[in-house]
Length: 329
Length: 267
Image (cartoon, rainbow over all chains, first blue to last red; front, side):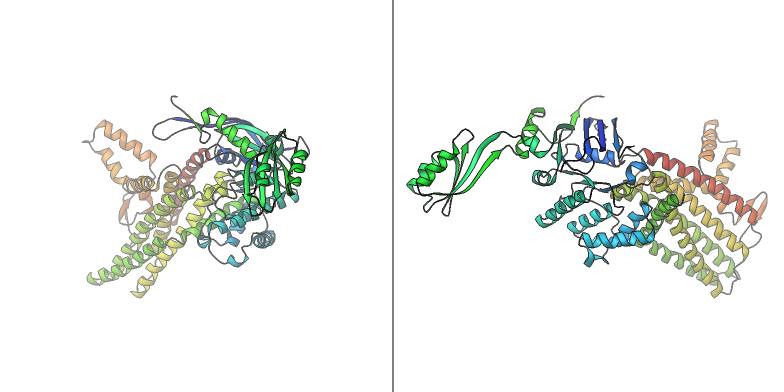
């Protein structure tokens, strides 16, 4: 899972972006000194609430907007530059493509822009259309595609050049659970094929389930960078215990339940959480003496969600989302 | 170099594909054919002037509708890339922004060339139907009209690099009209009644507006000589000079459009 240290595929230092609103001329700090590195071969999740600066950072990296201050490099090349974009694939947030093209024509256009020859374009397009499951929609114009199909077409065009680095902006946004799982699988598959994946999301579970490392950005500032496990912390918060009982509502069950909290009673099952300092062996012995059988014993740690919420609340009085807006020049 | 040309060509080809799907263009083509048919009716009503009317109306149709189409495509095609965010997936690929703008222009120019060709073909068919031959003067006039359309397309593209289609359309139409009346502006400069301030303004206008009158010379006096597509017309040398003048304007306008587009943020 861990990539060789020191080899930065994306290197962002003190990136800032300030702009003014069109009429009120209010100064908006979309990014405030963002610094992070993405190492070769890792899946890096860029996590933050809506309006936190994820898309702004990605747009600067892709050369779509300019930074007010700071530097960024992709594969050792300064951003923005054609060289920086040569070995990467990009899926924009809510991708918009030429809706009169078919997916094959879209991939052909993308391939031409990467300078691929006709035979390579055709071979890669065939492979990718099959990979993203759009074979049956090959002859349809993109305007007839559903949102999920458009997302798949976007993923395919991002991979046409067999890139070293793929950048996905909210790739699971708007997808159904199956679509989201397919995207997660694709991200893992790309990492296994030696690619570096950088993707943004505001969906914690998506980021936590696939990322080797994560950066949390809130109000244009990086709050934390590390593996989900490191960030969530190793501190034991408690232990979840699930027991099988003939009568989960009976007196024996009540005695056991009194030793913990968060008690849930189901069909012949009793679940409870006990504090970290409770002797779990003694509790399990106590439960067995009352006819219970142990089904699950699981430690409870801080989750990425806990950290995310704490970071959000700690940031500027608890209003996590959105860029910093200031008055004046 | 081949890669660069390939990228520019890819954008041009895609722009052409997009443009030919715009249904308004087919409406304009219908209007041009209708104008030529109307010219036949007008010609029938004239006394032995069928050929003159058919040529004049046909060429005016090419020139006017060609310019209007150029403005329409110029203000819509580049702006819509930004507005619909299709530019995001393109600019993030290893293409320079100047290559993108040049590709857009070439795609537009290809579309307009096909359209002017169709307009001219419609005129020629109807001229032949009337038994009127296609003279060298007509060919030169069509080439000049095409040159003007190319310059107008560059004007519209320039404005659409930083403005909305509505404003770009107004600005482009304004420049087209002013560019067509440069002899009248020059005449006003020679007038004793014009104030010094207004003369200065007119001189500035003449400097910053392309002289599109060069491309619509039939029926006008050029160097003291009356030229007409129905009689003595300009030489191929004149056509080439007007073409060179147009190329300079196109190059300048595209360079300005590229400088502006280069600095834009695509949010």
